[in-house]
Length: 125
Image 1: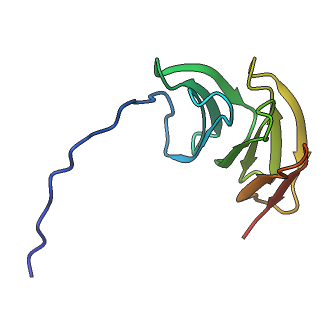
Image 2 (image 1 turned 90 degrees about the vertical axis):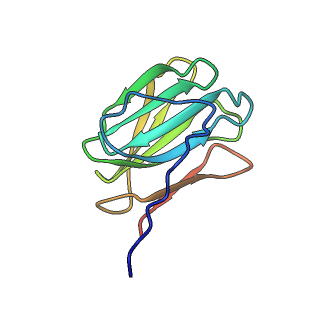
Image 3 (image 1 turned 120 degrees about the vertical axis):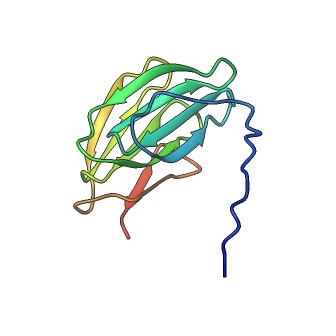
């Protein structure tokens, strides 16, 4: 049996370029959908303007891949989860690091904000 290769057509409406490794997670701001967060294998997260495709802030500080990013319900904080075992909380308005939390294990593979308050859950598989 011979495999048939199919041409891929790019129909994207925006292109966010700047990470130097694979992007593992994407989150859209809950109140400003033009604000997008990404987490990457290059150990950084980024905040982007979807409309201009401009990188607003590079969020550095993890020492291993960032595999999950999530905004809190109010949109006032962004959490990043790294395979380095830490959760970092950022201010999406200015890209400032607010707090670093030690995770429950050596690597964190998921994060989730509580829908009724500023409580972040983190875990690994």
